[in-house]
Length: 88
Image 1 (cartoon, rainbow, N blue to C red):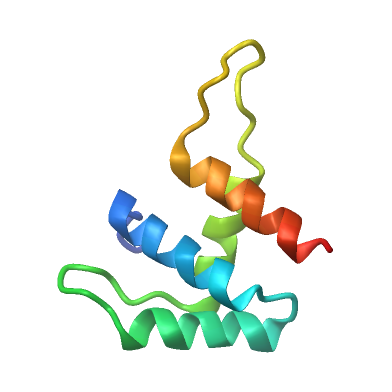
Image 2: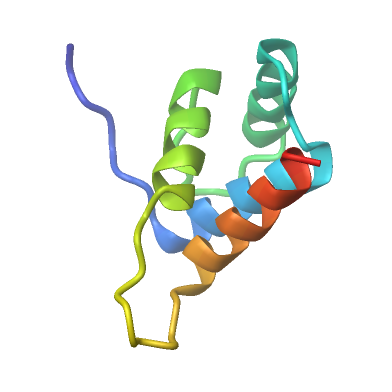
């Protein structure tokens, strides 16, 4: 299986904004995130399938932050915050 292009910071933040807006909890809703993501795609962004969007979101959410380091990258903090909303 060939890997696609990696995620740029703007692509990641764009995706996180859509996930936060839609709050997908089922596979159909991840398809809705994919549709929204690929429909309003800014120039230079790669098209993504629902599974790659979901994988990237959970990879960010599951990223461990170093103990004793109060700074957390914005994309990781946003993914963790959105996941808390999904879990309610």
